[in-house]
Length: 191
Image (cartoon, rainbow, N blue to C red; front, side, top):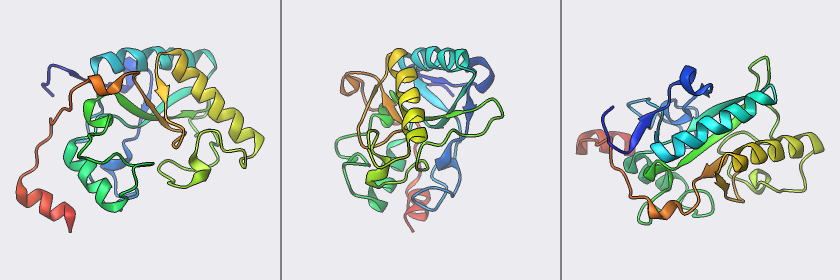
């Protein structure tokens, strides 16, 4: 990894669990999108993630990172699967993940089990909206706990995805195209 704006998130150093969903086929695209499964963030976001991790640990919990920096080619693939700007940023506008300043997270309990958030990651329905009143009280509490941890660390949120947090003024950061695919590799992923 060698990009001046991106730092690698080491699970031990940052005190987080890393499970990059797009490095597996168990995601909304149904295929492995990340050929290089390094968890990367812009250095500004990485500092805030470290603060969020410390706050979660104070509560006896651990952050699990589900997605971080997303190469633009992966954003194109996700847009092709779900061209709905409420859930997936139009690649023509650029995703905050592709700027390295957005992170998707959940909380794990002391036993390493995910807290009940009412839906899974990338469940692109209204039930995934952060403040959906149809959820049981326990899931509401867990979402609000995650929100409090992430906001206290300096992140902001989007209302349509309980797991997504980003730096304020994320658009001021440039898009980063760190992982290039050949035309053949991209064509293979598109099929």
